Image (cartoon, rainbow, N blue to C red; front, side, top):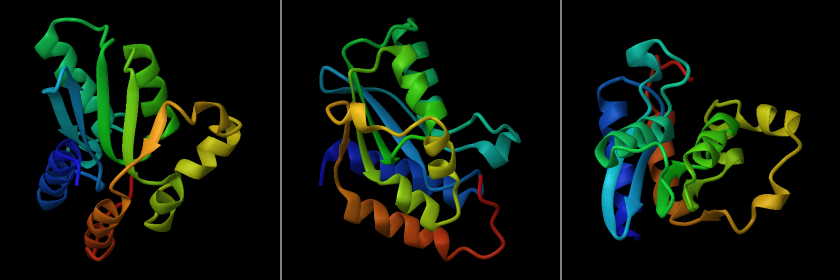
Length: 153
C-alpha cells in the first residue's frame, strides 16, 4: 500500500473515532514530505465545507506559508467531491490520488454523484485523478457504514 494513503486512512479513522465526520482523510505531499493532512470535520464544526481535502489544503498552506501548492500531490481516501476538486484546482495541486470512487461514496450514503452529474462529469480529468489502494479504502468505508446512529455529510 502507498505510504501516504496509509496515513490518509489513519487520519480518516481518527475523525470517525471522534465522531467528527465521514471516512475521508487526506494528505498533501511535496517533494516526498507531508506538508499537510486533515480529515472530515463537518459534524465537529457544523460546517459543510470542512471536508478532509479542504482541511489538508488549509494545513499545507499554513505550513508552507502560501496559497500556491504547485508541486504538491494530494492523497485522499475518497474521490474528491466537486467542491474539493475545485479547491485542488485553486490551490494548484499537481495530482490527486484517491482510494474509493464516487460510486463507493454514494454506496455509503454520500451525494457526490448527484453533484458530479450536475457539473457534467470528469471525463477530461483522467490524467489528474488516479485511483489507488481502493481495497484498503473500501475497508475503511465498511467500518464507517457499520457505525450506528451516524449522520452522513
